[in-house]
Length: 275
Image: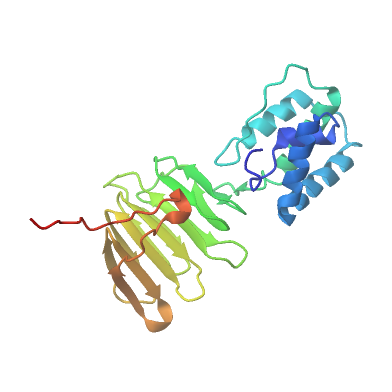
């Protein structure tokens, strides 16, 4: 658990609840608990359900632990088990089984499936996913992406929104397919592309939708506004329904996608020395 802001390390939590952590592991886990209130709450929720689970019927603990590994190895929620010489005790597996039950009953906390559409919630950290067509999407914190398991129709359609009344932010690297346009639905309008890279922000207090294009061309529209806008690389489209307009301007942000890659592109003018 090198990043203390990440979600809970299920294997370390299992060892902690089973009383099998080393002194160093205890210190690491307790430090993680104190970093932010959400960490303590996440562990408390696991602990409560685990305690209730002690009276539950015996389950296949090996299969349960395999389920923990499988379900938390999607997106950014990947478990990297530590190498251990000693074989874990049955109490450790009992804890693992309880965690598997928690994940199964809460739809893995971050992923939900209603049959037709899947839903990815980034929660308090970034998340990333590659869709069935090869499109790569990075979600900023508190963003929600709804997407199908596969794109079987004439278009590829997903929905982006914010979580808990916050703005939804995502960066899309759309896999090219001229025969099947990629459409992103938001509360502030729709974005249609064939293959490009851009950022979408929706559910903002001051704007209904903002699209920043890094590569390619996208079309931004809203059913309440009569005209759509074509946005090219280096431009930003701002949708404001109350004003009935979609404004397209040059992107003057020196680090427009900083949240995603933590980089700033600094342009400097060359120094020309006179002869």
